[in-house]
Length: 290
Image 1: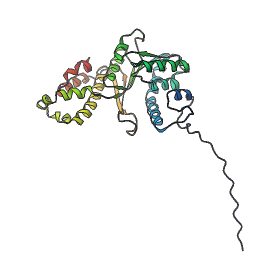
Image 2 (image 1 turned 30 degrees about the vertical axis):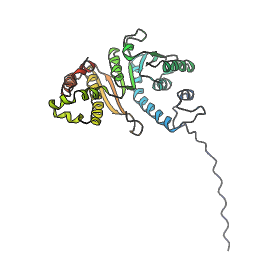
Image 3 (image 1 turned 120 degrees about the vertical axis):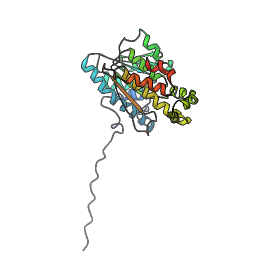
Image 4 (image 1 turned 90 degrees about the vertical axis):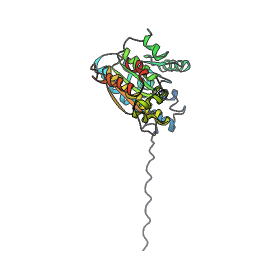
């Protein structure tokens, strides 16, 4: 007896999945992402751009609650982005969180003429009227009349070497409520450790920590951020330090978030001075103890 042949199953209808749906946030400007070269002109996203966007999104997740905290207390917000570069962070923050909040303003501070000009042009074309860009150093930005006397949030994403310290001084001078830093290329402390290495051998056995060049570089980088955290605590900030994204995305991966409390940590300045002395770094006291 022959068995009946099985009936062919009905083909399931094809379901279209937008490859950008898992990447784009609600209401996000596709045109902006194309202009920033995160998306290609035909709307595609390559792997490098996906990693870059993931980093910026992750940083935005830390900044968004700070924006909300400020705007819950007042109608206006001033945010300064130092070492803005192509202003990925500033543009995406404005697009996602600030374009519909009329009291919020962003100032991008960058020293490269061509990047400032491009950012100004892009903000004009996109109608981002409350974004402005200054071609100036961070130190000069602290003194210029082109910026307000106070800022609510100061950011510095991968501001190289001492530019992060300049951003901290700017934030302190502008009485910033919140400071968000992703430090990069901390070479100055390592250079001073290297310069005084022989003298340090006779001063403390801890000098073995930075005896070898690779340790000098890595320890100098770590120590730089420890000094920055103590500096902020001495000025009345509560500081948290965490990893920005997974190490597969970036080796410069430390995120420092500081919020003003008005209550300086009692021993922060003394400990900072003691560390500078123990590590033979007293010539850096003007940078960290001012």
